[in-house]
Image 1 (cartoon, rainbow, N blue to C red):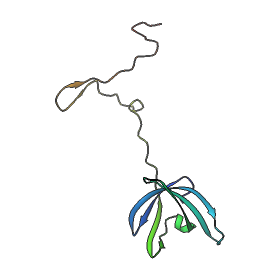
Image 2: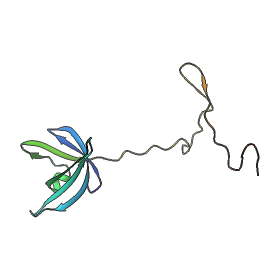
Image 3: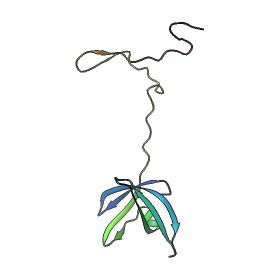
Image 4: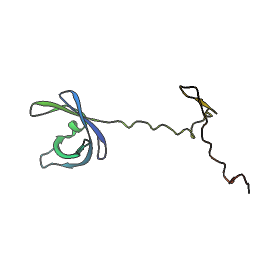
Length: 118
């Protein structure tokens, strides 16, 4: 289920329309309905409030003015690790398209400043 703070993708007529962040979900005066505040992630940013049932927030299609709309939670993309965190040793030199050598920058070891050690 999509919850507060989640990014969702909104489909309009079965086509992706926009991304939005759920800012709040509060009960409506009608039983089993909720007021859902969405921040539409486009330029310019736009805030809207839709009155929806729980199943609509969970991805069940519904209609607005006769057009099918569906809200789908976006799964987070796994973060890639930095090259320092990777177990493999980086190559000592890399060749570019024109054949020139590119030497990677190596960080100095701790305690070594200007060629002197403690």
